[in-house]
Length: 79
Image 1: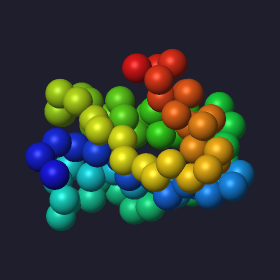
Image 2 (image 1 turned 135 degrees about the horizontal axis):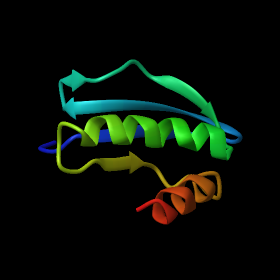
Image 3 (image 1 turned 120 degrees about the vertical axis):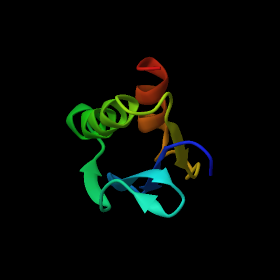
């Protein structure tokens, strides 16, 4: 992994997210979020924090049936 990323473990109703600067350099520990605007805003706050020091952030998550759809729409709407 050459660029910073946020990895998400998607489940029904809630998920966990963790930011990485490099494959062996986490920026934080895994944190839970619920699938709501407030929960997704936490992911965006970490994204903005990483972007202050790096150009771009990649999001990594598995397409899990329909559970990822809300997060995917939120990320697309917020570029």
